[in-house]
Length: 207
Image (cartoon, rainbow, N blue to C red; front, side, top):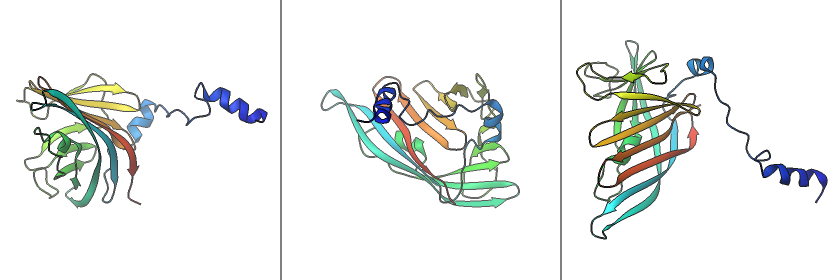
């Protein structure tokens, strides 16, 4: 083993010869970056672990699977872009009977730096439910509608921000990594085990 190789082996023990640490973005860089870079043809692939309680076996079970989120269409009009997304991460929490989750399509709207959930594939804000406006701040509370009891809670995490929606029975979290999009999704039901964790493995943006 030559000296250079030996040196790399030694420093690898402390991580210096492994992949470089992910750059921690400054506030200015985060503001300038796109928190959710949606574009037709872009894809996000996740490694998913699903934990549920199997009543028949009287024990908790864990399954792993691969999940893909893809922007299948985009329409613009009146300053609004409607992105039709197949396999939005929350689909992973849609089943409770142990069956495989089904990738559905839903519309994510973008108007400037405002992101909303649309009610149709069209670029219209009619009936839309607000999600967040960029940039966000650590500790911020975002209520889609003034009369709503439950709101999104913003927390600073490594590489971006986590948006968590708590209700009485469950909670869901989307971690946003500016320039990449949703890097992690987590869902948990309070009570009987029903938990999903999806971690991003690859992001392919449309070119």
